[in-house]
Image (cartoon, rainbow, N blue to C red; front, side, top):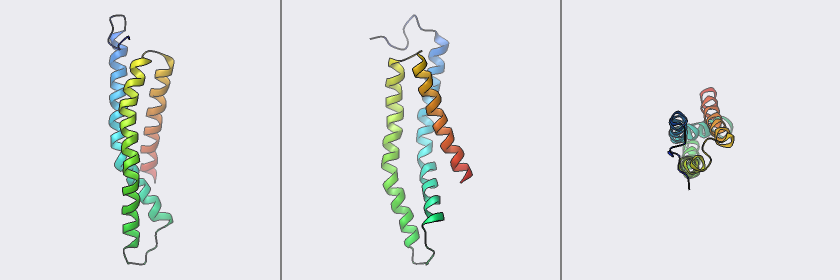
Amino acid sequence: MDGVLDVGRPKGLVVVAILLWITTSVLSVVLIPTVLDLVTRVYVAFWADYSGDGQTYWGGVAIRQFAVLPLAVLSVGVAIGGAEFHMRHFGTPKSWWVYTHTLGIELGVLLMAAIV
């Protein structure tokens, strides 16, 4: 099985691919608290009642607790799955397509969190 760092591979593309993978992996971890805050803001804006008994607070806490595990699994999937996928498909248009779409989704979520 060919590895990414084979002799025939252009070193500049290898560095770019590794930097893009690191960027997507780090952004996926940074997005966990960002998405949790976004989900909490949407909950408070649309479904919270301001009765003063603390139910809104504990509802927000419960939503964050239920959302953190799927987000963490997704983050690990982006890091490990992305590394595996790009090792197998290095230099192909499919690999660059996955990089651009992953970064686009992550930056879109960051932009949405900044707006909401």
